[in-house]
Length: 260
Ligand code: NAP
Image (cartoon, rainbow, N blue to C red; front, side, top):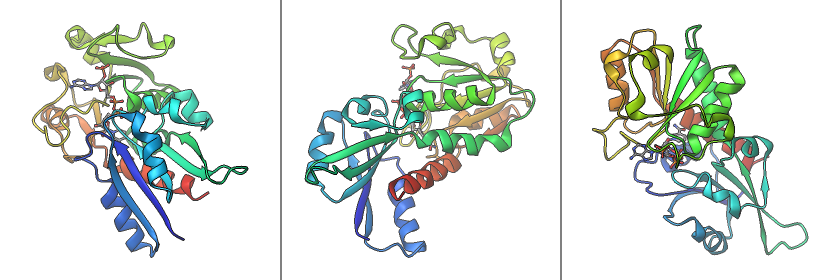
């Protein structure tokens, strides 16, 4: 088998994906495959990238393209359609025209987040605050709604936030957060890049002083392993989960899709 895979997004300096797949190929004796990083600041460069790399069989998609990539795809898997965001593309040749490519979008963040959070959920996690309203936030909301957890988003700008009409009354800005709200939402999930390498000193602007040990803080950021957001939680005795397990699970799901 000879095939190449890769990651599009911008910036990509934080990404562990190339290392993950390169080690996987070595460990599992998968020959003829390579995984490369393609830093794309403008999603309109995607068609050129596909043309210039005819061996590409699959791409992962990360910040900030998970939603804007939709208009460049030929097909969408049902889950990706329901979420409204894509983080995995399967590239095949068109049956009637092998020279041109068919791009089908999937969302493997859904499977990754679902499997990674389930062991940590407890009875008090009946409501969740999702920090950020981007592509990963939508996958998180999809999973939590499916589990039966009531979700609200925290955004910098209620008017700019692109959430479905179901959530239009379930939005807070950072300065609206108070002791009552923090008490009522025992699960808090960071889906923003705040605190991600190289800006590791940052954390979402939450009133951390109101956290209690019954809270669970989940950070999708995995580089660094312990973000400032998680450190703030630990100081208050909360349970914490980083994004590493989700990263591995969504990568394995992407591999399964590319090879099925
Ligand atoms: P995205 O689509 O660009 O969304 C990020 C959201 O965060 C934005 O919509 C924005 O929401 C908020 N945001 C952006 N910059 C911010 C800032 N400076 N201050 C406060 N809020 C900010 O990105 P994404 O693809 O969802 O990824 C988000 C993060 O999750 C990245 O760090 C990514 O690496 C991580 N991630 C990890 C995994 C994993 O497997 N562990 C999977 C997916 C994503 P508002 O405009 O509403 O404030």
